[in-house]
Amino acid sequence: MRELVRTNDPVLISFLESLLEEAEIPHLVADGNMSILEGSLAMIPRRVLVVDDHETEARRLLINAGLEKELRPVEGGPL
Image 1 (tube, helix red, strand yellow):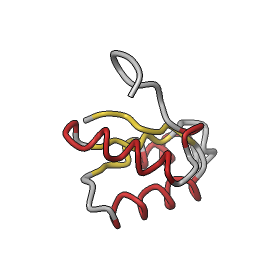
Image 2 (cartoon, helix red, strand yellow; image 1 turned 90 degrees about the vertical axis):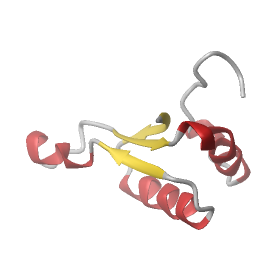
Image 3 (spheres, one colour; image 1 turned 120 degrees about the vertical axis):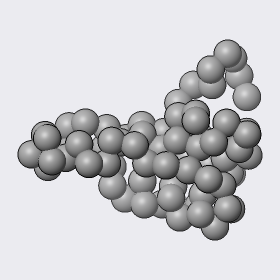
Image 4 (cartoon, helix red, strand yellow; image 1 turned 30 degrees about the horizontal axis):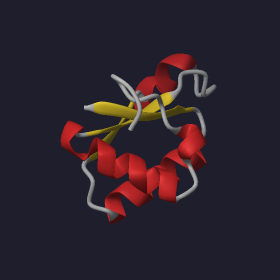
């Protein structure tokens, strides 16, 4: 899986999940249960991951939604 976004913003995560689900792009929000360990302070960022084969499609979707500033760098170079 590839990391697309890392954020503490629950609204952004919800929006990303909605976009990815609507586009039928398999994804996972990692570290969502870490709030139990940190005391719900939102200090540990959540990571939105997509299946490797859908990374390019997911990045284009987020760019088209105006979220290019939220994207993590591409491993191995530009998109």
